[in-house]
Image (cartoon, rainbow, N blue to C red; front, side, top):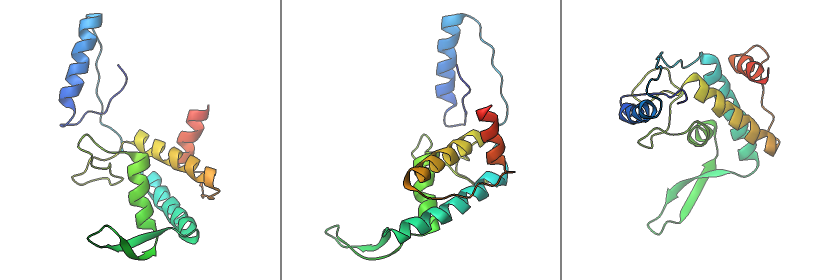
Length: 154
């Protein structure tokens, strides 16, 4: 069994997997640790990248509808902004929990917080997505993201 993130909502699924492992192997070793959400560095880098992404998208004609009539036709729009990018790409790259609610970059609150690994993967995915489209993203040399990238590449 690989490392898994367990919450109150997923503990039953974890137990079912654990029972299967015990049935198969007889004895298993289990350990637990708090899921580290990382430093603020990755969340701040994400917001900076969302700003750059939104500017690129807005300059290329991406807009957000302001109103939708009863027939589903949109009218009036505004430029795509950093908050739109954050919501869109958080859902796309960071993912959702078991109930379909997107994971959170926040350090506290009711939503399930993304782990350090989930944040790192979201940044990697967005970096790749941006690179494919020619969006230039700033990457600080001495950042948590760069440290994790270097570790993974070693």
